[in-house]
Length: 263
View (cartoon, one colour):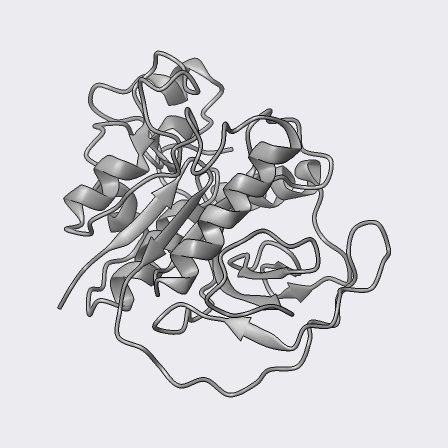
């Protein structure tokens, strides 16, 4: 079976045989600005459905690992979220003090966030000097082929400003049209990270245009699985999204149960 997972500086995707889908109702949530989500006449799906999967909140969150697991599951592969991080082979401890990683003891017993699967590629001007679990390496170690959005030069145009945003979204759309599973990175409400706070898997794109047209349209709608980060805290269902502080409080709550690196 062909195993291909496409990753961009803020996304990822998998190529698989076509699947027949039935129509789904429009999402009932509203946009951040309060406007109603545009009605669309058609949907663009990956070749195989992305099955929503709840991420483990411990150790800074396993959103990237969960996205990679979803790609693996669609290729007949299974690994736990812990092993999905372990397969990155950084040598960094994901849940507590470990050999060669003094992060926990030096940072008030907070798990090393560089151990988590991060989308950006090293050596491309968007990451720091410290080693981290970059997606390209994690995916290669998982035997999933991957590519990244060309954020240095862009897809069709330079990745800068509004034109760059449209180019980025067009790339995502083209990968979904090709049947691949795409993972993108997003900001949390109130988040402070200059690049992104969370990694999510694209389920489908709603469109009023030809489903084979990868052009950017401002009435397209992107649907994604946020791995439970939007409305679920443990067994509590929320009626509003978590902001960055709430997300960290939830992480700390679950980290208390972790071995070796108490919060």
